[in-house]
Structures are given as structure tokens and as C-alpha cells.
Amino acid sequence: METVIILVFVMGYLAITLEHSIKIDKLIPALVMMAICWALIALGLETFPQWFDSGKHLLMENFGLLGHEEKMHLMEETLLHHLGKTSEILVFLMGAMTIVEIIDYFDGFSTIKSFIKTKKKSKILWIFAILAFILSAIIDNLTATIVLISILQKIVKDRNVRIWYAGLIIIAANAGGAWSPIGDVTTTMLWIGKKVTTGHLIGYLLLPSFLCMAVPTLIASFLPAFKGDLQMEEADEKPKSRFSATMLYLGLGAIVFVPIFKTVTHLPPYVGMMLSLGIVATFAEIYSSSKFSMSGHDSEEHEAHAHHSPVHSALAKIELPSILFFLGILMAVAALESLGILFNFATSLQDSMPQLGTEMHSGGVSDLVVLLLGVGSAVIDNVPLVAASLGMFSEPTDHELWHFIAFSAGTGGSMLIIGSAAGVVAMGMEKIDFFWYLKKIAWLAAVGFLVGSAAFMLTRTVF
Image (cartoon, rainbow, N blue to C red; front, side):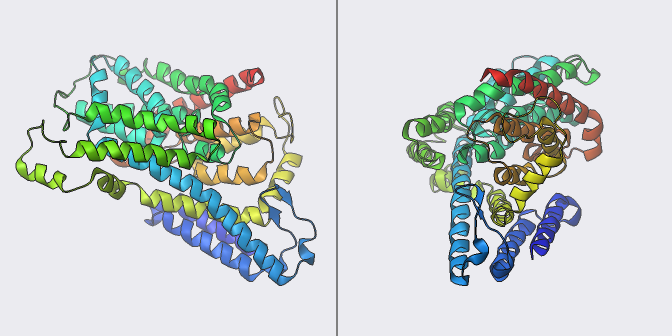
């Protein structure tokens, strides 16, 4: 039965990676895979020789001696445990997405355009790269990419120039997301799973992530594509709301507040995110009645917005397909973890992999394993890879292994345009060709990944 479950997982995984070829949204195979895996576990419960206790992170002893009722009760408890842990991540992400959509409702991101005062291509490249690096750490790399490419489309006429900028934005956004607990879904998973803490994550990864962004940007600034001045669209249009800047700073501040709330109260991060959402939503409701009072929009548009709550509007726009995809993939990986498959795989991996470079202090996991995980995240989705690592390794909180996994999975995906959420959304927004990215941008991403990894290996002993 274990073989059948693994086969179902592999088939589902293949369907996820080939979504653009088979024209089926990846959330569908993720949900089907999850349901079938747990159904097979329920049907074949008597045939499994072992069971993994996720709470204690150990294989249960004498599982085979338990009666059917005890096994069913244990399976239900395990399923509920994993659903709880997964829901923490999903509720957190929904809160963050809603805050970002509320900011966008008030046209808050138009404030960022005021930072761009030059027409020199290389300077604009650095502005967008640094903005992507900082914004992705605050509002996550996917959202930062959407925001910055939207701004780029408003100020840069030539699409052939824009796609170069978009390529470097992908690298910078993924690098920025790696050092923040709220910057990337995979880093959020490690943070909520109590594998990393905010202070140590920033301490370990800020420098490697910065180099991962800065080195490719520096190299690119010398390329012909970024020589000379840029023909820019005039970006002098006024924000749609007089509260644009206020909501931008309030929303970003509320998201940054979440790690502070967790540190002070020791409550799960989603509790702080719900508090932040409540505060931002309160101000949004207060401001919404006068949202268009300072603009030149016609009365019909004014009336349409007056009858819509900004919170309801934001909730209608959040990426629910992404939320359902994460639910499916995380619960499917949980099924493999519960049967001890991931634990056994990790044990065999540690025994068979050569120890290259400096070994981890415990567990004997070589740096090569984590580097391969980074390369793998470029080919396949990094969410299941990190979810699998949570079940494979038992190192304590803030062990350097978890920080290296956060960096490797977060930045390795930049090497292919389909390797990260930021890359996929940029590909859709600018219709970037897979092979163009592979030829022009992938090598820059690989250089950044390797430089950042080397920096991590050199500096990790400091913390």
C-alpha cells in the first residue's frame, strides 16, 4: 500500500509541475492527491508496519500491536494535528493577502513611484532591485513582484526592456523573501513550524540574501541591456485616494508588527496577523467613505465604490487558488510523513550522501543535500520540498540546517522562471518566454545563489 501512496504522490506532483502543458491548474492535482493519499491510508491502516509521531518526531514503537480502533483514533488525531498546523499557515497567508489588497484598494502602492527620479537604466535597475529586496521581506516575494512589475508597466514603454527588469526583480524578490519570516511561503512554514526564529533568521540570512540580490544586479548593470537612458512614461498621475500613502504605511507597518507580537506573546503568528488585519480593516472602513472625494472620477464610479466595503473587495481578490494548493500539497506531504516514509528517506539520505564541505553539527546532513534542494526548487515547487524537509529532519529550533534550507529553497527557485511563485507571476504578466529567461537570466540567478550559499557557509558559525 505504501508503494501505491508514493505512486499517487509522484503522479500528482508530476501533474503540478506540468500544469502549463496539461492546462490543468495545479490546485486540482494537489487536492486530489491529498484526498486519495489519506483515503488509502484509512483503507490500508492494518497493513502499515510503522507510524510517525509528528509531535515527538519519532517513529512509534509497537504500532503493529495496536488494535484497529486504536489505529483509527491515532490516524484521526494525526490528521487533525496536520490540519491544524497547515491551517495556521493558510490563515496567516489569507490575512497578509487581505492587507495587501486593502492597500491596493486605496492605490497605496502608487506612492512607491515617487522614488523613481532618474532615467538612467542602471540606476533604475538598482532602485527596483532594492525595492524588491525590501518589499518582499515585508509583503512577501509574490506580492512584491506583482506590485513592482505593475509599476514598471506604467513607466517603461518598451517591453523588451521591461522583461530584463522583470528578470532581475524575480531574483531580488526571492532573495528578499528568504531572510524574512513573512517574505516567502517556505520561510513562513519554517517559522510557524518553530524551526527558525525571527532574530536568528535575519542574523543568518540577511547578508547571504543581500549578496544573492546585489551580485547579479551588479553584473547586470554592466550588460548592454542596462546601458544608457530609459524612455519612460510620464508617471505624474495622482493617486486615486488621498489616503494612499497612509494606508501603505499602515498596512506595511501592521504586517511588520506580526513577528513582534509573536515574540512578546508567544502566540502563533496567525493570531497577530488577524489583529493586524482587524486594525487595518478598521481604518479602511473609516477612510472608504471619503476615498474618492479628492479625485476627479465621475459620480458613477464614486457611487459604485461607496457601496462596497474595502474589506469585502479585498477578500474577493485574494488568491484562493493558491491557498487551496497549499492545503492540498501540505496535507499530501503530511500523509507521507505520517507513514514514516520521509523519516526513512532522510535516514538513508544521510547515510548515502558524501559529506562535502563543513558538516552540520548534528544529523550529519551535508551542505550538498541542501544545495541540491535549492536546485530542485528551481525545477519543481519549493513548497512540497520544504514541507518534506520538515518531516525528514529533526534538528532543533534555529539549527543552521533550517536557515540554510530557508535560503536554498527561497533563492534556488530563481534559476528557472517556473521555479518560484514570483517567476510564474512575472511570466504571466509580461509573457516572458521560458527559454529567453533560461538564456539571459538563469546564469545570473545561479551566480547569486552560489555566492549567497558561500557567504552563508562562511558566516553561519558567528550565530
